[in-house]
Length: 236
Length: 236
Image (cartoon, rainbow over all chains, first blue to last red; front, side, top):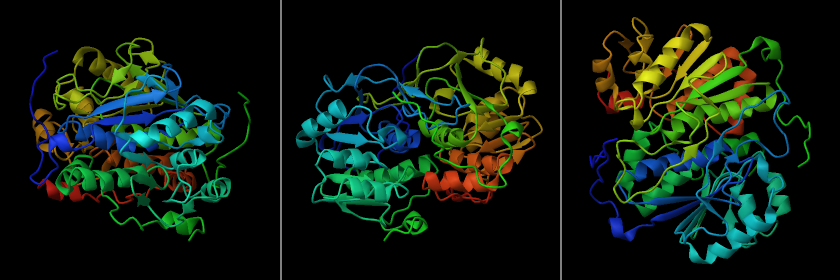
């Protein structure tokens, strides 16, 4: 297979310099993760990797493929419909990260392995620049205590359950995403696309965020307060 | 791990009966596929699998994990940012399908293995009920000749290149998706979400399509002619 150096995505003027941006990304996976929680943000970052030299580490409790199938068996009993992703690292050997991404999913009710997953988040949080959560990824982050006293959002169908389980967080009912310092939390599933574009815009530049959204033919919600799903579930 | 039979997603009244819907899905993967082309539609179907007994077969030329990394090396030379999915079947042993899903991606310029992938599509097309393509997945379908004389759309940045390569297809420039008989083709990347919801609505019912979109907190584009990206790239 020939390897070319074709630059298929040029950085627009005004983009952050290559040597001044986060480089090392970590994605936490657990069985029963929600696929789009992962592959909304990650696909935007895949396109970013055409223009910036960035690295992804897929981190799980072991190197066994991690499945979208819920450990609890929430699927229809006649279904066999799942996908498995190959981790690159475990909680024990993952390298230093600049950005930690935590997806949600039915598999975290309750988390299948609170011990190692939450312990990993607690351990690396002080050394990362950013944490980005999608959906009930913020529930996992809240379970570590790291969100105590901070402002965050989560999946809207699960909002009351999460807020009750983690009462020391200032949970915002009506928000597509919330940025509180270095922690960016988003609402459910597809909201991961909007939070990642808002974050790319802030960190890498407005021009490259727009280019990637056009690449994905994705019409962004750019207002963090846009949230018809809060209304749907009667949240404020 | 305890297995429960909790019905976490109830079928709304008016949904198609369980025994009258497509059950066997096949997803074709090749190195350099676009992740969101796959995981937009597949995530909606993952949620559908909570309510309907459906099965997914992930089909590639071998059982080796298939990577989003482009065989051509389009990524920034300093990047190492990819994800690998585990196939369940090869082109030689995949079972009979009701629905064939073909994603796009940089890896298909040109397809890394025209011989086996296109041959597989040609071989199974007469036996499936539906084909759904996302992005330049329609380019692969067009390469088989199956789209000759039919109406279809594709990724808008790549539109002219695809239309020139496959001139016997009636390519529609301005379309989020096109349904021509049993073949549903969509525009680029995130358009896969809109085509799958339109298709679920038609085949399984309006109520379950709405429930799944709410689950994903996704605001659908329900008009197949909605396409600001056609304008962006000067297409009609």
